[in-house]
Image 1: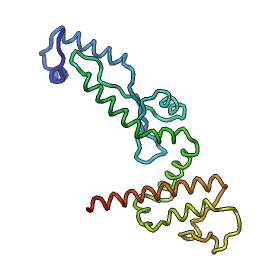
Image 2: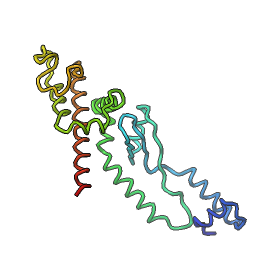
Image 3: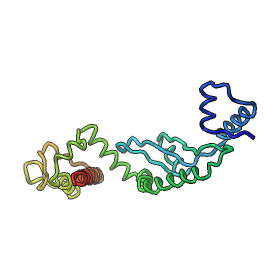
Image 4: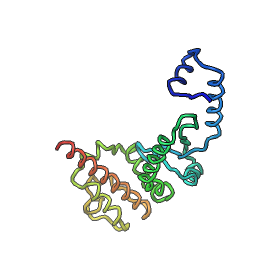
Length: 209
C-alpha cells in the first residue's frame, strides 16, 4: 500500500506526473471514504445574532435548527488515510467539544421562543433603530438599564412625566410601550445591549493597562 502525504497529493493536484497506479487506487479509496463519512459536528450562522456562529456535536440539535429553517453545515474530520491521523482527529474532536460547551447557552436560547424573541429584538434595534455598538457606547451612564426598568415596570397607567415614565432616560418620542410580553422582550434586549456595552468598556480598560 502506498503512503499518501500532503506534499504528494499537492504535487498530483498540480499536475505533476509522479504518481503510480497504487497512488490512484489509494486516492480513490480516500475519496470514497470521504463520501461515506459521517459528520462529527454541525454549525449554523444565526441571522438572529450579530456576528455569531454556533457549533454543536449533537445531531438532534442540528435537526432542530433545520426544522426552524436555519442553514446548517455539517463538519467532518479528515477522511481515513494510510497516515496516522488519530492524534489530529482527537484534537479536532476535543476542540469541537470545547466550542460546543461554550455555545451550550446559545443552543438553549435557540430552542426558547422567549430568548429568540429577545435576540431578534436586539437585532431589530441595531438594524432598524441604528442602536449599533458604537451608538450604545455613547450611553455609558446606565441609560439602557434604566430604559429596561421602565419597560419592566410599565403597567399601562397614565404617564406622569410629559408622555414618558419617570426614569426614562431619553426623549418621550422613544417611549413605545406595547403589550406586557412585548415590553419584557424590549427590556431583555436593552439589558443585553447594556451587558455588551459593559463588556466592551471592560475590554478597553484591560487593553489600556
